[in-house]
Length: 430
Image 1 (spheres, rainbow, N blue to C red):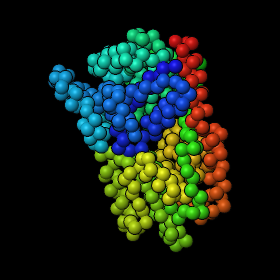
Image 2: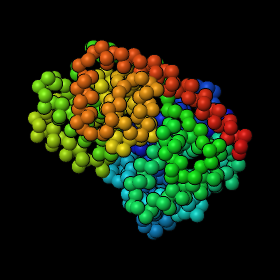
Image 3: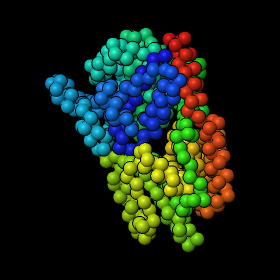
Image 4: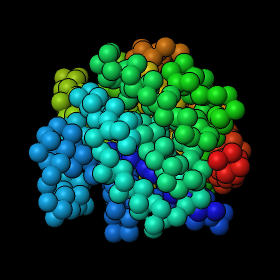
C-alpha cells in the first residue's frame, strides 16, 4: 500500500507531539512493508527538516501569511516564492512569535477549510498535482481536521481513500475569538463528508470531538499513539538524583507555570531541599515573556541554581533528559487528547504525575506508569510530587509497570497494524 501522509510541520523549534506521532507511525508502517511519503505543510517537519530536499513544503507558512494578509503578494514572481519557501526562511519563521498561534489566524484557518473556494486555490492545485503526478498514493492521510479543506479536491481529482487523524483540534479552535468558532466547527463538519474514516487518538477525544463535529459513528475508529520500547534505555530510578522533569513546549497552556508553582511550594519544606527541576521542550517567540516570568519567580525564591533549562531536546539530548529525572509532569491546563511525551517518559521508566483532565487518566490507567492527582492545582501537584520523589520502592513499581504497560497497550508496531486495518476499511468504502 502507498500512503501519502500530509503533516503540518513545526519547524523543530519545540517538542511537537503531533509531528513526532506521525513520524513514529510512518517508520512503523514502513517496517510493515508499506510505502509512506511525508508531505510537509507550512513549516519543516519536527526532527525531519532534511525532508525538504526530497519533498517540497506545500503551503509555505511565509507565503501563505503574506498572501492572506496582503493581496499584492498573490502576484509575486516565482523566484520570490521559492526563496520564501526555502529551508532557512521557514526555520526562521518557526521561531517567531505567532507561528503556531490560532488567535489572529482565524481568517486563514477558514480560508484553508474552504479548500478550492478559499484564497489558497493555487497552492491546493499545486499540492494535488504533485500527489497525483508524483506520489500516486492509494491512501491520503490528513494529520488533523484543520486540513479538511484539502479532502474534496483530493477525492475529486484522484478518487483515493482519505483518512484524517483527530487530536486536539479543540485547542486551536477554542483559542479563536468567539464568533469564529462555530463557523470553523461547522466547516470542518461539512468538509469531513469527503473523509472515509476519522481516527481519534484516544477514546476520550472520540467522545469530545462528537460534541463539536458531526461525524457518523461508523466513520470513526480510535487508534492510540504508540512508541517502540526498544527505542528507549531506562536508567534505574535508584541511580538518579531527586529531580523532577518537564517535557513539552515551554508555554502557559501546557501547564509549566503550574509545575513551577508546585515545585516552589514543595521546596518551602526543608525535607525537599535536595529536589531539583529540569525543564525542556523548546519554545517559540510567543513563549519568551512567559518563560521570563517563570524564571523571575524561581529567582525570587532563591532557587535558580536548582532549576535547569535544557535548550536542546532532540535525539541524544532527550535521552540525557530521561536519564536525569525521576518523575515527569506536564500539567496541561485543560488536558489534551493524548500527549506522546507520556509514552516516551513511561517507556523510559519514568513515572508520570498528571491532572485528572483530558485523556491523561485513560493513558495512565492503561499503562500503569504513573498517578493522577485530581484538580490541576499547584498545591495538589506539589503533594503528589512530595509523596513520590523519595519513595524508591513505589517509583520502581510504577517504572516497571509502565514499561510493561506501554509494550502491552501502546506498542507502535501493534498500533500500526491497526492503522493499516483502518486504511483497508477506507479503501473499501472510498
